[in-house]
Length: 392
Ligand SMILES: Cc1ncc(COP(=O)(O)O)c(C=O)c1O
Image 1 (tube, rainbow, N blue to C red):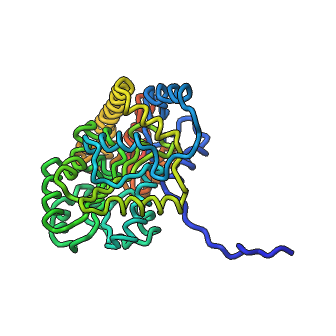
Image 2 (cartoon, protein in one colour):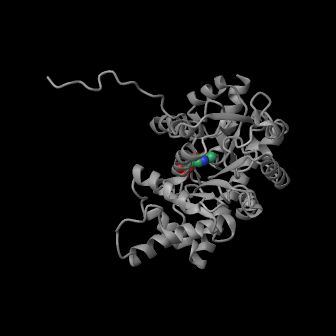
Image 3 (cartoon, rainbow, N blue to C red):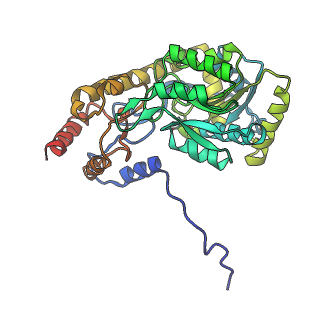
C-alpha cells in the first residue's frame, strides 16, 4: 500500500472574479451576460487581438532567429521602451525587470520589499482583491487606507488625505496610477500633486500599480501621476501590466521599475535578478517581443495608440449608455458617471446581485461591474430584467 502523503491537505477558496467567469461559461442560457469579467470586450462581446499585435507577431515570425533564453531581467529593448512609455525617457536611476504580467511585477517587488524595506504596505479600501493575496504571501504586513465608502458609494478622499498626514514614516503606499479597480474613482492631477508633496514631506514610499494605461483618459493623462512623481526625484516602485493596454492577457507581460537615487541601483538590480532566478529563472519572450516590436516601430506604435483610444472611447460610451438606460439602479450617479476605466460599483445589494445571477446576468457579489460587458445587443435585455426585478 502506497503512503498517502497528502491525505490531510486543506483547500483554499477560489478567486471570486475567476469563479464568476466559470459560472458564466457553464451557464447554457444563450442570452447570458457577463458584467463581472476584468477584460476588454468589444461590441460583439469578444476580446480581440489588436491589429498592432498581429502585425508585430507577423514581423516576429519572419525575423526571429533564435529561441534561446532571455536574460533574467528580460529583453533590454522592451525595458527601455517601457521606461520611455512611463517616464518619457530611458530612466537611468531605475532597477527594472520584465515580469509575468502586472501580478508578477507586484510579487517580485513584494519579495524585494520583504528583504530590504519590510514596512507596512497600505492598499486602498477597497482594492483589487489580489493585492491582499500577493503582499500577504510575500510576508508583508498589509493594511488599508480609506478610499471609498461602500455604504454611500462615494469617495473618501478627505479621509485619505488625513490618513496621509498621520501614517508612519517609511510606510509603503500602493496607489492605482489610473483607472482604480474596483471603483473607477481616480485622483485629479491637482490631488496627485498634493499626494506627491506629502510623500516627499513625510517620507512615504509610493508604489504605483498601473494596469490600465490609456484606458482612463488617454496615455498622456493616465501616466500623469507616475511621470510627475518620477520627475520630482522621489524614489518609488512601479508594477506595470501590458495585459489590458495591449490585450496581451495570456502572454503574461509586464514590468517592474524601482527608482533609486542612491548608489545602490546595481545592488538592487542584482537582488531582483536573484529573486527571479530562484522563482522562474527568466521570463517568457513572446509577449515582451511583441510589445518591443510595437513600441520601437513608429507605424505599429501609432496603430496601437489608435486602438487603445478606440477601446477607451468604447468604455466611455458604454458607461454613458448604462447611466441613461439603467439609471435607477445606480446608487450614486455622479460618481458612476465620472469614474474612469472599466469598473464601477452599481451599488445594489448582494441579494439583488444573486437575483440577477438567476437571470444569467453576472456581476461580482459586491456589485462591481465592467461597463464593457454591456453592448448594443444586450442593453435591452438588461433594461427589461432590471425593471422587472425592481418592480416585482
Ligand atoms: C489593479 C490591477 N493590478 C494588477 C492586475 C494584474 O494584471 P496582470 O493580469 O497583468 O497580472 C490587475 C488585473 O486585473 C489589476 O486590475
